[in-house]
Amino acid sequence: MLLMRRATRLQRRHRAFLGTLALAQARARPNIVVSPADGQRVVALDGSASLTLHLSTRRRVCVAATLQGRAPAPEHCLDAPHGTVDLSRIPPGRHRFAVRDEASGDTDDINIVVVQKSPGEFVATKDWQPTHGASVPGGLDVRLPLDGRQAAAKLPDEWRLQLYIEEQKAFFRADVKGSDTVADIEAALGLWATVPAVLSYRGGAPFHPEATAESIGLFEQRGDVVVSWPEGPPAPLAADTPKPATTTRALVESL
Image (cartoon, rainbow, N blue to C red; front, top):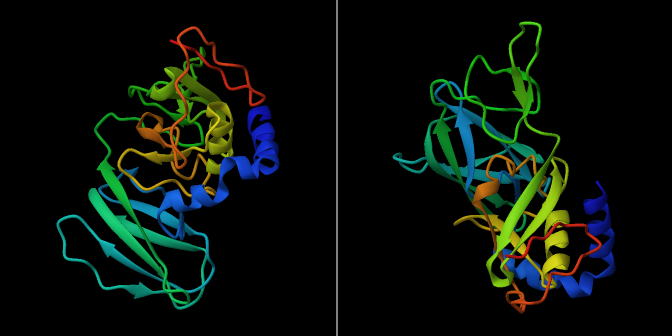
């Protein structure tokens, strides 16, 4: 996608401007867990959910789970180095998973919210699925056959992320694909706002820069995304100053 390709080039070219050190400090955690994101929601389709922790290290790690309403489980150390950890049979509730790197001693933890699928609710995936008459959330790709076959829907291949920036009384908009990384999106936003930006879910730790939009469920939780400014917020725009166009081609609508 043109937006993200240009943002990636500009991110490398303007690394000093983006304040790489400040961004790393702003994340305030070792970032062992790439995805899911802290505060991400997972839908339990049959009473429990499964998920995979994607890690930034391939060294041996230990994982401890604290499930809502239950005593903390003992730490479990993997027998061999892995880049992922599979978790299954996770009941509905808000749960904490702590990951410790045995070699460095660094720890990272995330909170995951598992919600039970409601009767008649349609849960979209990357693949086409029949809707079976369920109400389809807005923004999905939908097929409505005229030959009597069932309607089907899936997550969109590309969608529009829209963030209202209070300091500038304007919207930042970017077309996002599932494979786009958090680093690319933050670079585009930082160039648009002229100051470094960090994204997270409301109340959660910042996203890992290597996480993809798909891996953190960004489309499904786009309304929960918040922006923080590790080097201070952008300066307000004067009432009569239009927001300039940028090479990222993000669309802006001043209020």
